[in-house]
Amino acid sequence: MTMIPMVNLKAQYDALRPQITARLDEVLTSCSFILGPQGQAFECEVATYLGVKHAIGVASGTDALHLALRAAGIGPGDEVITTPFTFIATAEAICYTGATPVFVDIDYHSFNLDPRAVEQAITPHTKAILPVHLFGQPADLPQLQAIAARHGLLLIEDCAQSFGARIDGQHTGSFGVASAFSFFPSKNLGAYGDGGLVTTQDDAIATRIVALRNHGSTVRYYHDEIGYNSRLDEMQAAILRVKLPEIDAMNQRRRAVARHYNALLADLPLVTPHEDGIGEHVFHQYTLLTDRREAIQQALQAEHIASAIYYPVPLHRQRVFAERYRDVALPVAEDVAARCLSLPICPFLLDEHIARIAGVIRRVLS
Image (cartoon, rainbow, N blue to C red; front, side, top):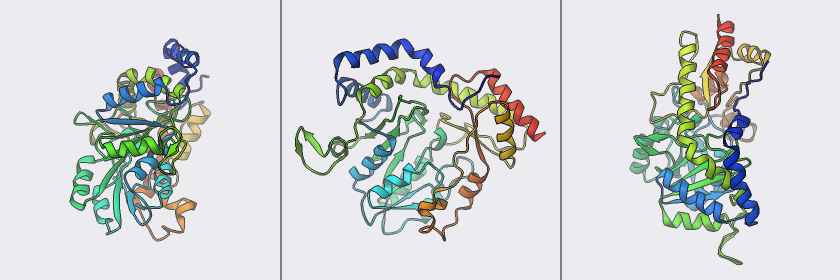
């Protein structure tokens, strides 16, 4: 029986193999591997696509978050309001700057930051709001922008899972003072290793990130501050240049897969994701809620079908943060973490595979 993975990177590579191998051959022939023409071209192309003035390639999505926060002036004594229901990199990046993450509850339908909870958590120490566009669903940026403006706060976007998503035609990653993207291989736009990107409309922030990613240097061997070694290498940039023109079609197929799942699961006792939230969902994950998670996972595994729990423990309950936030109760995030289950989704998931997956779930719940 054919295994159905969470994301079929082999099928994606097979579809783009000639373009990818040709572009990689350019890199290998040029022997330019760091801060070369591929990276420069990708930064220009992705900035045009996203509608931003500056796009700066870095070594990972985590670095993108960290450098975006640092360049925006976040540091010790500052508080940054963010979500507890995300990958830990979001909170790690805040901690790297010496600032304090302030976790607030999420909206039950979108799994993103609840703007009402954000406003209630603002203190004199609050410096920024850091929403995550979780699973490809844009956060409620119109409300969050309004809150930030009222209170004089910075808005910094975590777009690790939302490449290509839009709100009223405007891409995520173009709303905040700075935004961070990840090119981890399984992302909607993924490299073949780690990679990240910071976007901004602000010239000063862009200049600072260019220096921070390269040991605090803008002129070779002259260093203005302590920086980092965080550069998007040429081979990853070359691969991303091949994939970028395909992203809208790939995201459209993800939406079609999600609609197919929704149709097949509609009458079952599940909470399924929908496209009727804020903006245009790009379905990095297809995540549902169920009280029968363990039974469904076991049944899927028996049929050689992958599934995943993103995320089983909200950040304020992780061991690394548990003592600091022991008195913090975030009931929606805790409930969602206890019941969420992600099913395979990618542009190369066949309709017959969707039907097979839905059939297993139907048998369990019936």
